[in-house]
Length: 239
Image (cartoon, rainbow, N blue to C red; front, side, top):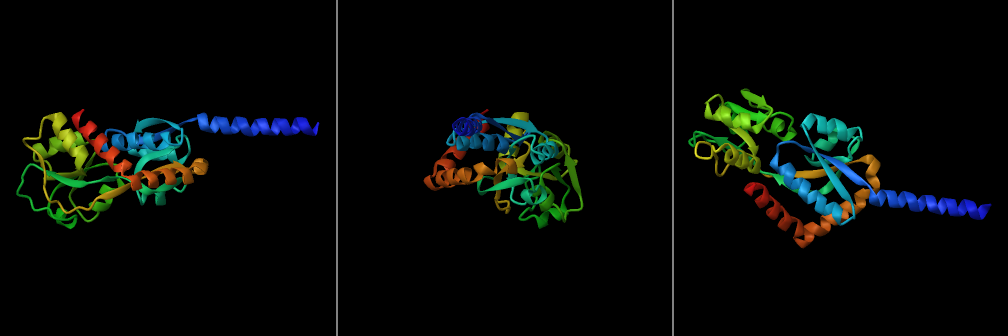
C-alpha cells in the first residue's frame, strides 16, 4: 500500500512539472504602441530560453492592468518601474528589458523644448493611460488627453495643440503611416531621459522569477538583448 501511495505521489509531481513546462503563458501588451510590439518579441526570446511559449494579448492600458493584476493574464510585457507600486499582485522583473525615449513632436520647429518643465508654455497632447506621461506633464495646465497617437498627429496638424509627447519610435512610425512626416517632426535634442521598462509577472508565477532574472542578466551581459532590440526596432519601423 505504501509503495502504491509513493508511486502515485511521484506521478503527481511528474505530471505537475510537465504541465508547468508545457503551459502557454498569456501576457498583456498595450495596444497600438510600437514599443510594446518590440517588447513582446524580446519577451518571447527570453521565455524561449526557459522552454516557455507565450501568447500576447493587445489590450487598452486600463484593461491590461485589471486583467494582469487579478491573474486572468500572467502579467504584462512592459511597464515603468513605479507601475509595480500600484499593482501589488504583479512582480517586477529587474533589470529592465527595454526603454522609452520621450520625444516632443511639433509642427512649428521653432518651439523651445528643453525639459519637462518647459512644456508649461504650450498646449500639450498625450495618450491616456500612461503613467510616465502623466508624471511628465503633472505641472502643465493645458493638457489634452486622447485615446490614440493618430489623434495627436491630426490635432497638431490642425493647430489644436502645439505639440504632443510620445515615445520616439511610436511617433515616427505613426507619422510614416499617416504620411505626415513632411509636416510634423520630432524635435531634436529634446532633453528627456530614457525611461526604463520592466517586465511584470503575476505572483502566482513567482516560481519563474529567479529563472527569468537570470536569463535577462545573461542576455544583457552578452549583448544579445541589445542586438535583438536593434533588430526588432528596425523590423517594426519597416512594417
